[in-house]
Length: 148
Image (tube, rainbow, N blue to C red; front, side, top):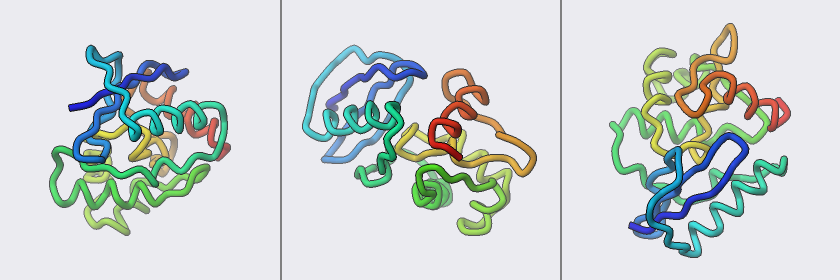
């Protein structure tokens, strides 16, 4: 499986591709580096994103390697949240079904950091949880980067 790692201001990310789609974005630097056209384009898009440009990361093809039908529905709803905007867990649940808590659980299982922008899903009374990097502090920084 081709992988390519990128440096970002929040930490290193390793992107994995299978059959022309992103299948994982993991924290840390991967052992193998295979620069496919898709992975090069995705790393460039992340660089542009972190440079403050309004990049549409949802335009990239994804194929999560796991997840229930419900989780994948939640991830699709989250991918539709425009750059620079946020939605509450309850608002996502209203579109995907389930509860705010089940949306939070789906966000915690997200295998595609940034490309399924779970940082755009916030609590009704604050930022809410975030499992990546430095947790809520990173989530708040990403929201501020996007200007919401």
